[in-house]
Length: 619
Image (tube, one colour):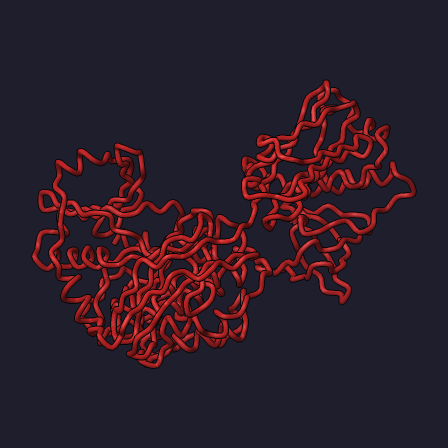
């Protein structure tokens, strides 16, 4: 490894770093280290106060002391330091504007060593192209409670005199505001004494002199009280469960309280109720306000039929209404193939009248010849047609033509779970909790209808980004009603329960085993039964010979995570926690650590997984 030696230099960690590779070390935010050397890949070799040595990325370090008897010597030293750091940072920022913007605070730190006096800046910024204004403290996005004061502030530097221009909703509306600019210090500040809802939006500030201009932008969100929440559906789905659906109290409100706190979305299934009459009211809330409870909705569970009789007879076996080939061609146009599976191809299609995207799952002709194969596809269609949940893909319509069937579904704009996390570049316990909650809410809903998905694996967990990212469950080709006979047909067994691969009795608890494998994978970058050989994996699953207790395997670890894993990855399906019980578990109820970890371990697993699926597809 090529390295450049440094003079003795101390640094302080600007955030915590967790080692994910050999020779790296974990260090907490604020901890001081001595820098021994920097390699060409942007890693610094450091030594901690306790003598531990190892590598960390240079962008986790801030200079603590700078050698030099005078400012000129310090300038030369810092130039050398940033030259070495930039040699590694160029790899990160090259051709990646998103990463450059996300690390703007790192770049602006390069100016922190310069003196305040303008004359000294001319030594550094000598060319005319560099004499345009520079924003050294950008605007910051803010969330403000309705009626409180707004203060937006930024700071520019310019050798020449410059003008400041502000734009934003409060200025456009000509409401009362004050702009204060101190050119000598470079500050410009917008003040609004008492904000209103209409003050939400984008605010923009530009500094301009004779050589050019620059600007900074921020978004202000005014948090207002939620409105009334109206229940649209209050339906008994069995003697112990109620389905509630409601309208958004106000645009942007996503948090609600029914019989439990923190519900996100506009539907929930409440289970484990007694068979008596209930009355429900819902109110919405945000970080500042609690809305008024909406009107009462009543339901009598003592009069409810059993769930299985409702869903399996009335809904799933109901005759599907198809649209024909001519109607399909009139409404939609094909765009591109986005996925090829063993039995179907998924295409992006566009609705002609409004250019809205949809996904079309087109079953291959050779897979739809026999009666049994057609029945399996119709079962998938009918299950999708019956379910409605924000964490489950929506079936819009079904096309039947020339012995071929097409399911038209909601378009999901994000990648599958592992790809999303890898593109994000970091992972944390609280992020894993968030995705696990989405999956558990989807399973809780399905299981309340006695529907088992039976194919819970990373490829079937897509992300959809609308205001915030959420997990969406797809592919109901393996789904069955509780205890219905199912033949195992997935390509890999890594996420399958023992009863699935042994062709035993299937229940909704089979999905809970798979949920546990997903959680284990997110925290370790492998599966608890991993092996080079298929038959060994199968034997380990059937014998439950796992690595759950091997703490060294975990990149993200807590006792609560181990507890929930041991409660779902167990042989006895009936003893596994349900989705509802998992949502009420200690780990899901507590706020996880926000410490960020690199995703190298998931990148390695994701590559192995993709090669495994490609190899199987080739066979």
